[in-house]
Structures are given as structure tokens and as C-alpha cells.
Amino acid sequence: MVIHSLTNHIYTVWGAKYSDFNWRPEWYTFIRIQNREIKKKPFGSYKHVAHIIYFFDNMILQRIGKDHRVTLDVRIRIVCGLINNTSPKILTIPMKREFMECIWDIYKKFMNEWYEYYYRYILELPF
Image (cartoon, rainbow, N blue to C red; front, side):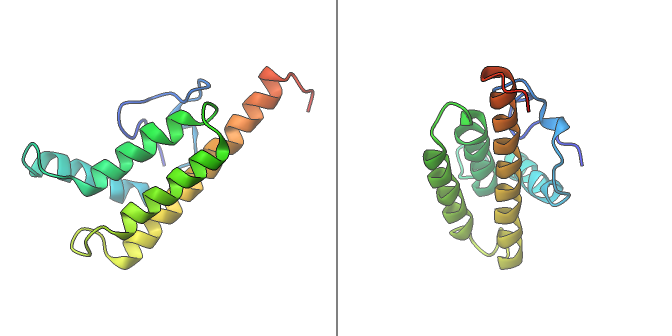
């Protein structure tokens, strides 16, 4: 599945494109919910899924390599708490579980890619 950006970022901090990562197909569902919230709800109203995706993109994915890993793990847990507190009218319980799994999955992929970049190009390790 190809996702070019979650909010307005096309590249990661280290220069990899979002579309180069292998995103789970379930992300399409949450991106559609986000787009529907942005288009349908009036300006100024709280948009739950859009807020969660924005926070995840700007405060976690774009902070990889800048903030400490423990800080990012705590922020992931905060995002999972936000997902869990979302009304069942917006996200059902299986959808919440799937959303959390998608977030953890892409976070791990981004972290592994960051470490590979860091070891190869910053520390210049041969392996």
C-alpha cells in the first residue's frame, strides 16, 4: 500500500519518503475516516481521528532521531490512550485494536529504518 503523507510531511527526518515504507492496508480506512472528519465536521469542532493521526505524525514520526526513544514510546502510549477513549460511534473496538496495531507497526518500521540510516551514514559502520 502506498501512503504519500499522513498530514503534510512527505519525507522523514532522514530523507526517506513515506511512500517507500510498507504500510498496512488498514491505514486506508483510517485515512478515509480522517478525510471524512475534516470535510464533514464544521470548523472548530473536535476531529478525533484527524487529531490522533496529526499527533502521531508530527510528535512521533517526525521526532524520530531527535527525541529519546523512551519519550517516543510514552507518546505512542498516549496515542493508544487517545484511540481507546474515542467514542464507539467513531471507532468500534476491533477498529481501535487495528488502529493501535497499525500505529505500533509503522512506528517500529520507522525506528528500524532510522537506526539503519544512523549506523550506516552517521556512525559509518560497515555492516
